[in-house]
Each structure stands twice: as structure tokens, then as C-alpha cells.
Length: 189
Length: 180
Image (cartoon, rainbow over all chains, first blue to last red; front, side, top):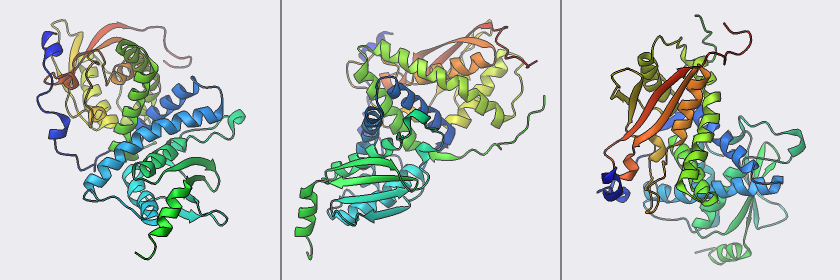
């Protein structure tokens, strides 16, 4: 007992090499964990939007951390500065790392240059969730939306990301005006 | 005892990092929501228990493991089949009590704690306490009441992580209707 109180690990976590991240685990383990998280959040809120916000917050915790690991591991510390490259990075690298495959589609809204959509027909997090009838609008992929939001914010592309039932699940990404202006000013460079 | 191996043993996979970080998000949230480490431990144990009572079904369906004859066999199955199946690791079974009713699982490379460093002021937090609940819940579903505690935790500077399982009693009345 005594040693537990006094001795700290001699080697801090930053001294250890970063794992290559190739490991994988039984999907059931993740599904059980995620299910408990959804139930936990549900017990602490009253409305569907509140629940989705909670899930998004949890996702953001994951997003900020995966962002650091990815840029360290894959991009040699270099962050994206162009909007389109950033979005493609999310659609391909981030998705592949987390879910083993790219997201299905990336689209730009016709009527609003601030809005982009990432479409995923069958998101992993929704695989084992059956939405109760009285909560039809609930989409637990709000968790994934939170991950995307954190990744974008962490790279200097402030945005709000939400998950909707449309063509499977559609993540709606609304960037701050400033992001679009900045990107336009960089055109041609 | 013949069980249909309907679902097959090869389960679908998910990125271990997603799992690790998601668990981290949960623990961080609990620390925000509760006043003390002890309360967080309790909550993790409760969630683990809920997982355990469901996970045992998945385990039995996929593993074709039959009824264990004694607690030693149970220990082996937990370490070599259960942990292997759900966390991809095989803890060492060690430190049996003379009576054979208590043993330890020595867990190295715990995927829950990859990337994790306990901040100061959380010396009472059992970060991986979800596992205690999972073990308790799943064993209860096969009529074994056990007590699960963390004896050592590598996150707190111990050399290894040691989870102690103590057999309390066989549960006799818990059989669901229609089962032998």
C-alpha cells in the first residue's frame, strides 16, 4: 500500500514510443461499451437534443486525441491548411483509422458554401442501437459527429457538426464564415 | 452439451484505438460528473456489471465452452478464452489461495489503459474498474458469485496490474425457467 502512495511511474507515458495503431478488437466489446455510454447519458438528460449533445461531447474527447495521434503518425506533424484537403483527410484517414473504411460520400451543399455533408450509409456506432419509437430523431452517431467536430476545430477549422437520419446517416458540417473567407483568400496560392 | 456454433468464432473487429479512446472519454466524463474517485469506481463497476450480464451470452454463443468443473477451470477459461475474445489479451492466472477459491489475473498490455496516465490527485481511482463489473456480472450469469478487486494497478506505479477474484458461493436459484 505504501509504495502505491509514494512511487510514481519512472517512465512517463511520453517516453514510450507511440503505438502503430494497427491493433483491433472484438466489435462486441465496443458495442457493449457504447451501449452503456448511451444509457448513462440518457439517464442524465431529458430531451433528445441534450442526449445528442452529451454523446457529441464524449466524441469530442475522442476526436481531439485521435487528431494528435494521426498527425504524429501519418502526416509527419504537418496539419492541413486547405479546407478541401482537411475534409478529405477526415473522410479518408480519420474514418479508416477509426472505422476501418472510408466514409461513403463527401458533398458540398448546393445552396450554402459554408455547409458540407459526409454521408455514411451504415455507421458502426448505430449497428446495435435500435431507436425507441418516441425518440425517432435520436441518432447516436452524434458521437461520431463530435469526433469530426473536434478534429476540425483542432485543426483550426471551427465548425459545428451534427448527425441526421438522411441517406443512412448524414453528418452536417457547418463551418464558421471565417473559415470560408480564409480558404477563398488562399486560392491560387 | 452441444451448442450450435452458429455465429462462428471469428468476430467482427473494430479499431483498438477507438475502443481505448472511447473508454477514456467515458471515464473522463464520470470524473466530471461524480465527486470522488470512489463514486467513479462504483459507477464503472455498475456499468461493467450491466455489460457482463449481456456479454456472457455473446461469449457462450461464440466460444463453445461448456460448463466448468471447478474454479481453476473457470480461471483458465476467463483468461485464455474470455479476455482473449473481448480484449485480445491473455492475462496470467496466478497467486492461488491454498483453498483454491481465490486467484489473481495478472494483466499486461491492458488495451483500456493505452495512452493513459493518471493525473495527480486520483490515487483512489481504479481506471479499469469496468473490468471488475464485467467479471462479476458475467460470472453471476453462470451461477457464480465472486468478489472482484484491484490489488495492483500499473497506472498507479505498481509493477503490474493484478485483479483478484474470490469465489463467494454458487447461486442456486438463478436458473431461468426452462433451463436444466
